[in-house]
Length: 234
Image (cartoon, rainbow, N blue to C red; front, top):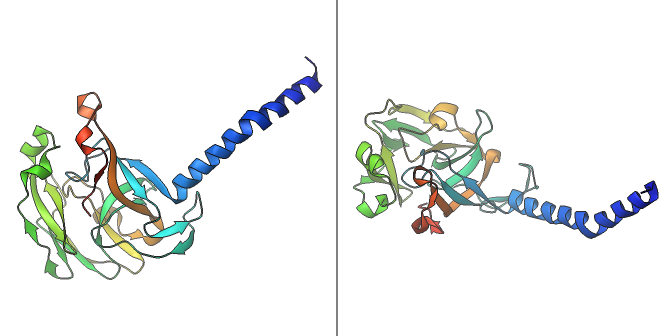
């Protein structure tokens, strides 16, 4: 097979096959970069709201529109609210994390015996309904304590692990302008802003709004069907 034939075949495959797959791939990845995405959750730092093995849907248009594959903003129409679950890049090492927004710019955040205090006012806690814990493993229920926490009037579940060494007292800490204070709902098992500091606004990727898929890692990755397409507590 001569060189001219090889070039002719290469042009054919480029026009008929490869070019369109490349265009399709670019479109898909641009959508994931700027409009909507998902994020796999490998740890239990957001239990009982998000479990290991959950894949959460990320609305990247919740707050702004970014240039694909960058953190540069084309337009911005909102900012994260207290209580939102967001995906962001850690200021420590750039790892993509999922946490809850606890402190807004200008807030003073404090933790007293695992109880959150915002701007000098203790946050309200209530007993938790058994139904909120239906997807947790028996071992988790036995080793942890749970409550319902209200941020900006919105309830969500939180957990603590009494037997674990943890940072249960923190602050008071003043959140600087343009930054957000993030915490995991599993307060005694979360590497968050208590350790790596506040998160700059431009590091926030989008808002996690729902569990799209869920697989039980401790049970041969069996699907947790009851968690598929379920909304997350804001």
